[in-house]
Amino acid sequence: MNRFEELGISGNVIKAIAELGFESPTPIQEQAIPVLLKQQSDLVALAQTGTGKTAAFGLPLTQLIDFNRRNVQALILCPTRELCLQITSDLKSYTKFISNAHVTAIYGGSSIDAQAREIRKGSQIVVATPGRMVDMIDRRLVDIKQIRWAVLDEADEMLNMGFQEDLNTILSHTPKDKNVWLFSATMPNEVARIARNYMENPHEITVGNRNQGASNINHLFYVVHARDRYNALKRILDFNPGVYGIVFCRTRAETQEISDSLIRDGYSADALHGDLSQAQRDFVMKRFRAKTIQMLVATDVAARGIDVDDISHVINYNLPDEIESYTHRSGRTARAGKSGTSIVILNMKEYGKIRQLERILGKKFTESKIPTGFDVCEKQLFHLVKKIHDTEVNEKGIEQYLPKIMEELKDLTKEELIKRFITDEFSRFLDYYKNAHDLNISPEVKKERNVNTKRMFVNLGQLDGLDNAKLKQFINNYSKIQPTPVVAADVRHTYSFIEVDESLYEQLRMAMEGAEHNGRPVRMELSARAKRDSSGNNYGGGAHSHGRGKGRGWSAGGGDKKWGRGHSGGRGNFREGRKSSRSYRDKK
Ligand code: AMP
Image 1 (spheres, rainbow, N blue to C red):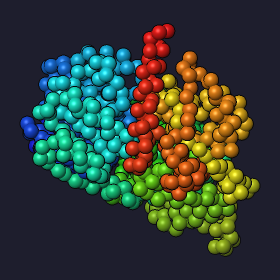
Image 2: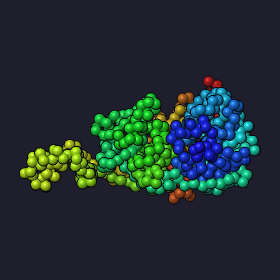
Image 3: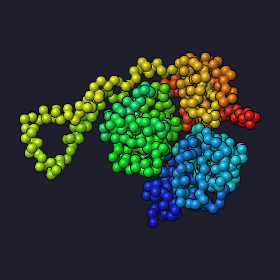
Image 4: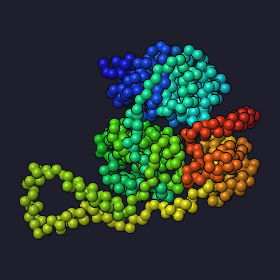
């Protein structure tokens, strides 16, 4: 009997998690599973990503749910679409061998009707982001009156993102006698209040991060021109000769492209992404685990679940769209008590996002300079020299050749021998870096790009088929202003915020008058916060400096509590907009 069975998990789930490589429970699983398997089991768990919390609530659900019935019995709420998809995929893996088990993901930016159809097929478990869940309840597309378990995952993040009201609405549609299981990395008053309002004498557990608080991760970032991104990556790899790591890219195509380029340039790398067959992915992973390849170039989705202990570096080829993903990415290193480095390659436009990351994650990011050709050569040389110094001599293997070799080299002094050896081993490298230019951006250029910005609310969001890049492009193209006025966008479910170059703000406002997006009038206004700022009574007054990172937002919308409150006003406003947009669509 393995430990999971002893905790009360049954055979077909044991088989499924064994396939995932779960051999023994993590501390949170060890503590939570027996409690949650009880009839009455309200729980408050303080745990971060990486602790194994998904299985801590997911495995008990697989035991408690009646999979012969085809109604929604468990509702899991989480802050982001990415986490929603991840939890869904994890739960599907756990229930792989349970017939009739049906798990559905409910999130914005994808067809609500298709999701409703999925549920109607007989989902017992629904994993949802709060905004979309409220929409579904409003439209009577889901019935949660009979649920027996409500899981609030990353509760603090949900509140930070302004979902308090939505959570109340959703929970008011659930039965009183359900069990509530709340997971949160921190326990601010707002989270404690939920615990008080919706639970009775909850069992409380606290666990440290599986990666030991992830405090042993060194977060570095490099700022380069967008065109130098790939060269910067190569230089970083060359500067870290013993690197064993993952390069994260945003899309499958980019993943393949970077991997192909690295292989072409002589690096030990391979790609892992969703366009590969399962067999191909298994093959790549086998080679990576065996350290036959040093660098895995991967998408977030493909790298999910990779649990390799010795990863020295995680390199963000560019920042992920969601802050949550950064935590997942960096958590691939410094596992099992080891230390590791998480590197971000940024272009100038993304500079401000680092400060947001620092604030939201509570971690310090150190700006580093891309090593020069000289630095790289020096590092590589000494790596080689050390390797030679530490090489264990294979006496037996070389014995028979040695006399002849000695004879051949007898006229060379030790010094000459070393010089020749190094030249031979190293000249290709030296040649490559001989004229390498400095990839760092000069402080003057950085200052120039550090424009002051104003923050604006826009009544378009993911529901309009937009993401950060698309919204920026739409407004910049529509306005025809040069240089482009929108320096950053933060697209939410039903609305967005943009950071506009302050000097172009008036011009943009006029240019966008009467603008439409897919037939819908575009409404833009100074965000509530920007208005407060310009009246000089908050946050030190004045416009945000994008470069200095005061501009808020970025999806995954962490942020602090002030942000959460300010934002519910925006959401309320937008609700009305959404309704009118619906009627507009209905009329069409
Ligand atoms: P989570 O905290 O749920 O995001 O899980 C972090 C990672 O740990 C995921 O990749 C899981 O697949 C993995 N994991 C969870 N539980 C275990 C376990 N008992 N043994 C090995 N890996 C696990």
